[in-house]
Length: 196
Image (tube, rainbow, N blue to C red):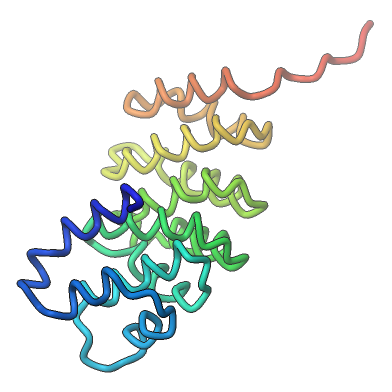
């Protein structure tokens, strides 16, 4: 059993409270049975999460919408599981969805996992979205500095020189300084200027 799936079933078991459907969904081999849970009215959240997670790991794109909703959930454990499944799903819509979630300033409190997912995906959308979010975290007294740290770490991992200006600016913010400095060290050096 996948270690993340083991963790998910352990977390969801108390929510399921002994419901017979829990063991059935955990063992289901038919992807259609799992997909039906995502569209059937009245299914509890734990059942939808388990079905979406299992479909995501199997590469079944019917899980995409449910996993994106879970990626932006107020429960960080649900976000972690959704990000893990989305990374393995391989749906080409994932980077655009993660960028939209990460840059939605109304939901910035829940942006940590979308930001980390963008760095993991290494998609064309990743660097521009991370730069945008980090720029917003430069405001004095910004309460979402942990999201800014994750942006700086992601930009360092991606190593794109377009991130240099925002990372230089982030070094002036005490809570972002260490992550920004580390990220800058991972960027390629400035190209040599013209010789005189």
